Length: 171
Image (cartoon, rainbow, N blue to C red; front, side, top):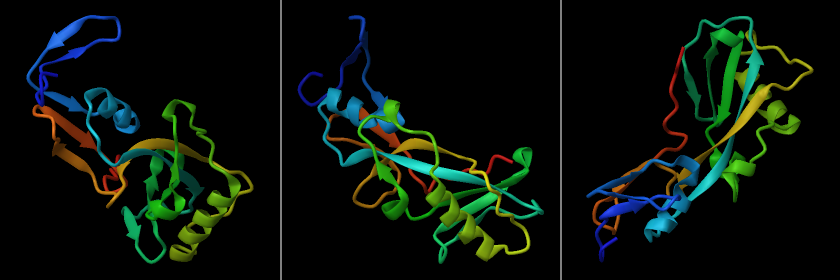
């Protein structure tokens, strides 16, 4: 940095790359990169869980069930419905270290979200005895939880962050 302008990146091994712009797209590690750049933004990593619920029918679109505070979509390759929370204020778990995050989904979360999707599609989902799901981490903007694609107070330093509003249907 030269004053309030990005002029390059110093590598961990000691090398240096000169540049006029840097885009921080480090996901849940973005707060660490921001710290290195001297940028203070209200971002933090959050643990987000999704589950896979067995389904008798996969002929459905992606659904955002606002009253039920869930989203779900068919996961045809897995023979089920992928379900996640739309209420990260309640279901998201702040984490300190994305590398140490537990990827296992707990039974209470699985049962709650399985029940929520069963209320929405009572004839299409089953209640298995096993829990299948995964947790991942992403960065969130605390004041509003919306994505951040923005300039910062440091000239030439940009942030590209995502949150739960960027759900992509990959089927």
